[in-house]
Image 1 (cartoon, rainbow, N blue to C red):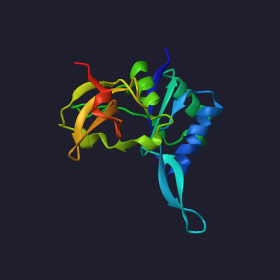
Image 2: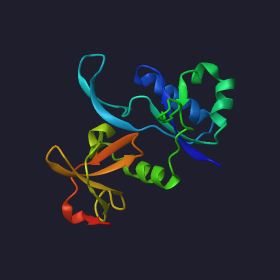
Image 3: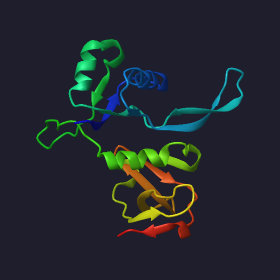
Image 4: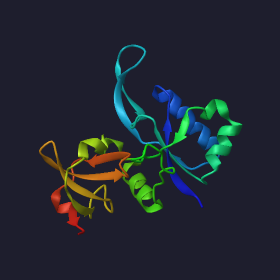
Length: 182
């Protein structure tokens, strides 16, 4: 069965992870690489906007469990430093590869795709211990998005999380566009 697998890419720099994404694209494997706009200097030293990977070493692919292992055997140069993400268990062993449910993955991709200017990626560890209420956005740019209303930096934001791997806070959503779901 096809599942979404978060992968860890052990490469320094954004160019390498973009090459891994291009590799999966060439293989016809559906994938998702969170991207965000940053300001960087061009060759002439002038600032310009640049789209770069938003989360260091994370790409999510939709594949069969053994498909990555087979691809790594065939394409060792491209995938030598790519591994399934796993949780470390209390006894020191590693769990089976982490998977993301289809509904959660689609919901996250719908929120972040083509909305890079209206959201901010945040470290999931920054949210540890924070409480919030489940909400749905009912109007505006993010209509249909589901997340958690949380207080971050003394402001309330709707936060959409991807299983502790990646989180985004949605910027500038009027409280009138939000409905509590629980």
